[in-house]
Length: 255
Ligand SMILES: Nc1ncnc2c1ncn2[C@@H]1O[C@H](COP(=O)(O)OP(=O)(O)OP(=O)(O)O)[C@@H](O)[C@H]1O
Image 1 (cartoon, rainbow, N blue to C red):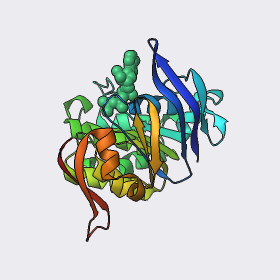
Image 2: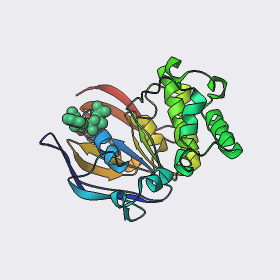
Image 3: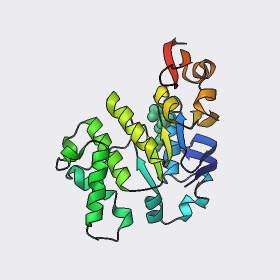
Image 4: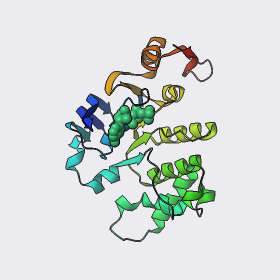
């Protein structure tokens, strides 16, 4: 499923937060969104998952205006792991992941065996099956994050929108979750702060600065010392790692 954003602008409290955004994520593409704090990454993702309505411009899901689609259809197609921590105090881990099944069910329809199997498999994929009876509120930040990823997986959507999916995660789980979502082959749009992770996993990256998309391209051509100096104000050494063959960024100093 393709996602595209055309001529999108967004004004919040009289301030233009996003200006004339153009972005396309083709079927199965892993798209990264990088940029400094406050540049507009989360706001753009909120437009893409229909939490915010654009002032001008349109978000298309398979060429259909996302606001013209029934919300249930959007939920069947697009899953989100966001920064907003949901207030889910009185639920077990399993109940929360089962919420991912609701777009595929009728109102008050009970969970089937198939739903249950999908929930368990989703928990196994994020290595949280041992916690399935635990209270969500009692989990650590990283465990909560993995449960939210499991909920998104259980939703079985073809588009995954991820807002900093690896913050809170230890290095093992950062790599494990990124490997997992990459392997699924879904259309993914992810805001990422870790540029080495972005370089390793993204097919294409969009750079956002002060609400505008200022560059886009494949990691190898896009991520240069000049770009990182201009956008992030850091000096870097960038080379292809001899073992991973990934572009690898070493930070030298703030510039
Ligand atoms: N609801 C809101 N009301 C007022 N200002 C907002 C609101 N939401 C976002 N903003 C402002 O819009 C700008 C972009 O915020 P956004 O959260 O999209 O940035 P970001 O790139 O995701 O930042 P970070 O890397 O820090 O997570 C910021 O200056 C922020 O203060």
